[in-house]
Amino acid sequence: MNVYLLCSAILVIVYFLLANNVSRIRANEKAGFGIGAEPAGPLNRAIRAHGNSAEYTPIFVVLFLYFLATGASGWITWVVVAVTVCRVLHPISIFMAPDLNAIYPPRFVAAIGTYLGGLALGVALLMRALST
Image (cartoon, rainbow, N blue to C red; front, side):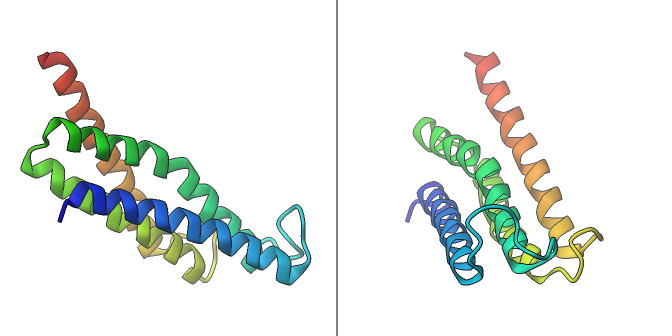
């Protein structure tokens, strides 16, 4: 089992599940455009979860596949796994949060994990660029 491919696949699958969820809710609410009647309602949550995934999934998949192709060290593998867990937790926390404008601990942890993991992978990429 290849962790880098598995994590990439998970992110891609989550992205398309979130996209499908937006379409499903739009159809149910008969809302072709916009966020629906309620700003904190299910359509807006679905749109934000999908939009957030769209912001991060491409760069993480590219980074994961780069490190796979170039042979990554052990700590990078753990960062890839942690980022994937955070990216799965984030949309779940958007759907579960009682108030999208308040700090919700699972969402906060997922966001911080995403930022720190992305920063760590960026530094690893920079270190490789400077060492060649």
